[in-house]
Length: 86
Image (tube, rainbow, N blue to C red; front, top):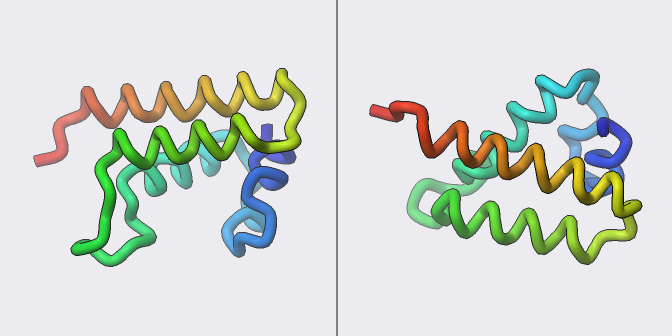
């Protein structure tokens, strides 16, 4: 999964430091919360999920890798939707 994620986001600085699935999940959570964007320009987690799934769909990854990454993104989205962010 680490290599699939690196392939999907090649040329991104954070991918070279990823060593575990837990780290990937942390990056995905940050992406879904749009933490890498200025607060006034942030998109909703729903829109960020759609963008990520679209990126996965059009990638050159194997179907197995695509399914795995889609599953992880959806899991993290559900986790965000059910956690208390007050």
